[in-house]
Structures are given as structure tokens and as C-alpha cells.
Length: 173
Image 1: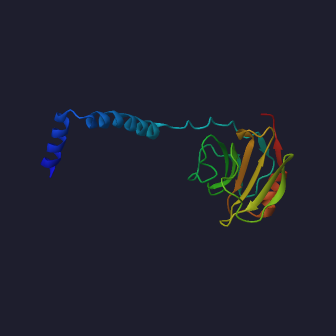
Image 2: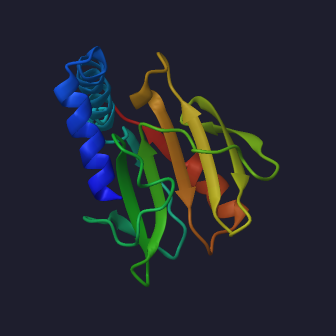
């Protein structure tokens, strides 16, 4: 079978017909178009600066100092490109609170949510089925780095979420 195909290609090439020229001239544009589309990339967004908020209250099980490095595996809130994430850990060293600048939650709230005040900005807060509480808000002018998400990891009570938000202050920056 291979011999038959090679013989046909050889006979076509020797005949000097225009089919060979057409085939050779149409293949390179198709090849270069595929190469261009598979190698194009989008540059990741430039990182946002840290969120300009000070937490005046933390739940009793949360350390008052921010974690220096990511403690747990990043999740859908803390792994978004271009964001800046501040973390607080609990007494066991696990992530307790994440404050993300540069993104709103990646999906709609799966349960009821309510309006909250975050240092003078109007936001929304609600529980997730896995026990997390999520808060989202933005500040004017509303650029990407003016979007914020705050995630409270279990165990946390709604009262602790409310008290933490009430104790937040926006600082210059």
C-alpha cells in the first residue's frame, strides 16, 4: 500500500500538473495559521498592591499577625492571577481569613446573601455550603484592583464575620 501511494505521488510530481503547485502553496498558510493560534498567549494581569484595610477585630481563634506565606493549597478565591492575598491563620496554623484584592468571587453566591458595610463601602456577604463565609465589595472607581473578596474559613460563626467586618478600617493606600 505504501508503495502505491509513493508511486502516485511520484507520477503526479513528474507530470508537471498544477495540482502539485496548488497543494504546495495552500499548505504553508494553513500550517502557519495553526502555529500562530497555538502559540499565542495572554499576559497575566499585573499584580494589585495589598488591600488597604486594617482589621481591628479578629475572632478569638485567629492569630493577630498575618501569615507570611500561603499556608494551605490555594483555592478558587486565593489562586486568581493578578490578585494580592493577605492571610490570617488560626491557632492550628490553617488559613482562617483571606483578604483578596483584585477580584470578586469567581461565581455567584450559592445561598442567600445580605448587604454589609465594609469600612464605608457597601458589600454583600453570605455562607457557602462548605462552611466558608464570603464577603465581596468594590470601591470607586471600580477598576480591577478596587474589587475585594474576603473569605472566612470554618469554623466561623456569622457573629464573628459581622464583628470582623465592623472592626475594619480603610487606611491610605
